[in-house]
Length: 344
Length: 171
Image (cartoon, rainbow over all chains, first blue to last red; front, top):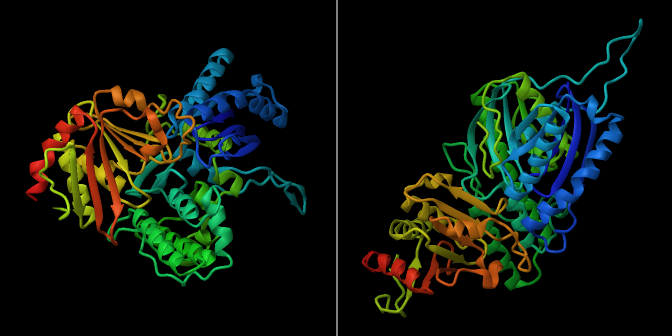
């Protein structure tokens, strides 16, 4: 089954074609550059940019895959969570396309997309056994149950995935999202946007033990809290500024360590408590190298992380999630566009 | 919560100058505001990163009968709607917006939607802010200590401020 999938929940316009929920036939992402001037986002501009970009991005996806719309079996689009105007553009476009082509439309929870990014692969190995060609080998599917950590600019959810589309949220942030904490700390340090990659780069030259910062989690539960850490960085930067130039790399490294420790600690504990077979990451912050290393260090369970291109928002992950929601009709398939939409 | 010594918190002006010694106190102040709020009230929360704006918003939610645990930072999606209380709470965060173009964040609809609207980073809205609103300014004094100045800018917000004045001054 081939699904053409659309992602427009924030400022990435993504269209992909995914086969059987796993194989990427095309995955085109257009980032909106209009926001970079301000370092912020303008919802109306975001929606307008999606509208402008969607058609060419879809045509490019079809060209990349060598397919026509007639070769596709279903249309999917993100219906939440995200910016309401941006979501509306992609979901309406997808619905219209499905209606015109006489295809089913599948609404997808963006967070489910980040989880199912772990099922995607680009090409099958040309299997060559000693006795000649064999069946093409696909990378193995993640084994369930799994602990999934979805961390991005908007989300920090720790989820138990008991089976396909069977999610139970164990913890979440009670204030700021992890990616948001990275963005805000980067701003305090005068680094660029988005903050995650900037902090990671700067932290490479820094000592993570320079400044003790508060733990970013709540004891005895699986929730995170990054707001106190943000305030501590603010106070630290102010007091360092009073003494002279701020050792940016050391502050960045200490901050990054505090975030990674908090996330890795909860992931490792949940993986042990629920005796899972896999730990998976998703979302833009999953691209952070020290986070992956810290989780790997603390747990013996196999860790799956999508390649960076599939950690950030893209259409392919929506196509994967749509496939599994059609195949495993457990749970609700969302259809209305909503700005908040929990996973599990 | 205590009234700052330099100001008379019982003065009949639309001003209340307080000191909060912990985020719990800040949340309690929000809770009182939430309990006293009427449909259509707008609170603008001013203050730098980490000043306690989301903490105060969480208190407002509690005062409206909304589970405060559901209140997280709306920075990324700009608007969170909480319909489950005695009236809806519209929690707006304009941090990521540029001043020049507020656009359709849905925030004007929220203000007219018959609930309570809490706006973080209201400076981004410039002249578009509702004329009659309760300005709440949060300022770092020490690690957990904050100065909180509440100022009414019209008759509606003055009623809200009067609704909590006795409560707070006696606390």
